[in-house]
Image (cartoon, rainbow, N blue to C red; front, side, top):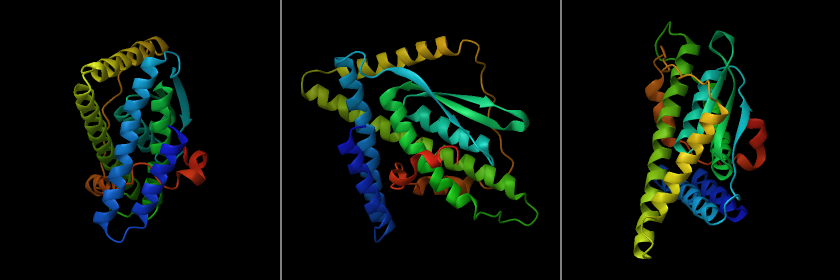
Length: 243
């Protein structure tokens, strides 16, 4: 993402954090999310005009305990919403040692920016959470909370990407270049899928994630409130990865 747009996203989210009301905060947050989604479309169109400027590749990000599987799911679902694929490198006992995010460089950059912020937000809340029912496992509750958080964040990001795509298509039609945006994005998706299959030819299908705690709904509510971009990125991007 260009430095000017990144700076604008940070400023919008800083305003969201300092807003007087939740409604005002949501306005700033929505603008930041929209800007990041629009940047993804712009980067795709620029890369189509300059082949080789936006390379496909992978980035491996370590996952730390506790809740490494939940953190990995948050990263993988963020990547999926932003036109990337993800590979979970599992370890013993249901742990996830690392996640490889695979896609175009500009999309991987967006994934890293968002995941870093989301992880900071999620972990700062997790340490304070306790189940509402006596006798329920704290760990199980937190795992289900993180599942709900990741699920809701994925939904919001996918909706933002869809809106940005529709608006770009409308602008292209008005400029008498209709079809270009759709074709470019479809071609990028096919190229990522081909490269992904070549890079991981023996990869099996992931098992459907399950959870036993009662925190899913509370996590989803936190995901609805999450800042999708994170003003804290400037000071702690690398520290947050796998934190």
